[in-house]
Image 1 (cartoon, helix red, strand yellow):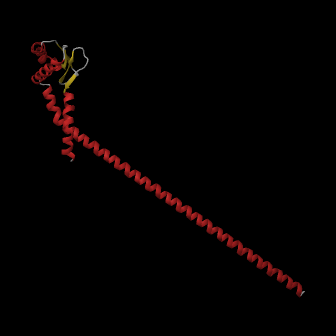
Image 2 (cartoon, one colour):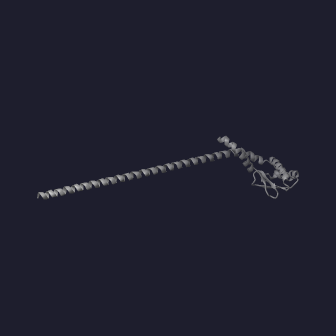
Image 3 (cartoon, rainbow, N blue to C red):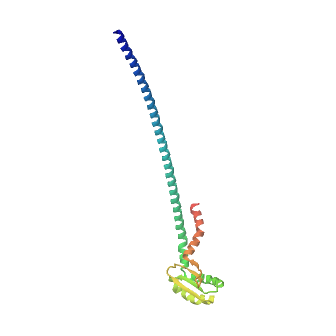
Length: 200
């Protein structure tokens, strides 16, 4: 009986010892796996945070660039607007007044037509503002025709605000001396000086 009890105790102790070893091994393995899982999760979290930080930085850089571009464009548009306004104020009224003055236009027409007639053997065609017909038509048919010694064909247009267009009667080309062309010409000369005065 003692032998049986001794054998039972021995088997029990061995089983208990073996179970304990297996349990400890399983526990160690589970702990090791848990550490690996935690390490991987930590690495993934760090990678996600780094990616989010990079994307946020890229977005911030893009937004700053867009804001800088927009502000530069707005500043440029404002400068151009101021420049155009100043040039328009300086040029529009004087040019408009001069090119709508019949006396001044007669001088311009006579000077240009004389130069033109020395180079062209054909008759001259003129386009003038309709609103100046009454003041200019007698001059064109009388004094100008006599001075040039050739035909002068004059047309009048409501679309022409001031100035004139001159060319050969055949219409092969014309020279524009309108208020619009003078404004552009004078504006081109004034623009650099205006920029320098306004913006340094």
